[in-house]
Amino acid sequence: MGSLKVNDSETAVGRSAIAELTRGFMSIFPDMVVTLDELVSASEGTECHWTLTGTNSGPDGTGNRIRTSGHELWQIGADGLIAESKGSFDVGEYTRQLEAGFAE
Image (cartoon, rainbow, N blue to C red; front, side, top):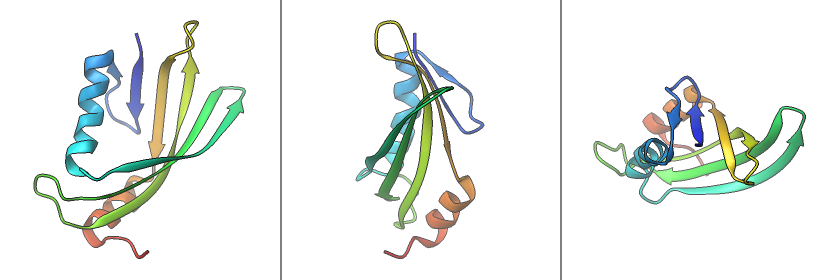
């Protein structure tokens, strides 16, 4: 069973919980695009570096666009699927962009 943890949030365990966690981001950024920047093989696992762009136009949205980067540390299971993902991004910068947007 897979798991996903983002920053200091509760760990989402199993497909339903992971889907619910990601649905939250997708609802506030309906036009969200996540771009894979780089995959790095590290001693702790596989690092997936990404950039998220989108407009905060979901419920109670600000209408501001954001562009933020982060990474996941993946543990791959025996079946070749991601068994564990620990994600991280700069919450301060994310919040600043939600309030003020970002300059392209």
